[in-house]
Length: 145
Image: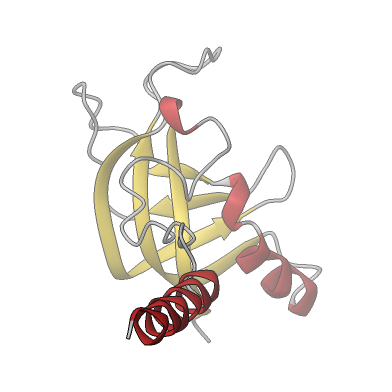
């Protein structure tokens, strides 16, 4: 009788270990879906402060001299009152979206587009310009024909 209990205990222990070995103890961290902390814009996420999301907004894409910029028709929101600023630099982590457009239209420097994404302000980044720099993380971009 004690021998049967010992075998049963051994079988349960082996099964328990086999189940435990097959399970993943630390699942990988999920990618942020909102990117409100700036992880979609640049490596130094502490610099970027989420301002607003945009969907299907007409813009003019300009570049590549000095970087790629999106020129909006309306002023962009900011922490401080600067109603004249209507441009935002494309975030470095989303430049892949721009590369295919620039390859399709290599001679154009002003391209009419529609964008979907998030606007960030970066008041802790030192610049020589007046106002708070703005950066735009592109989720999707389409050329307007």
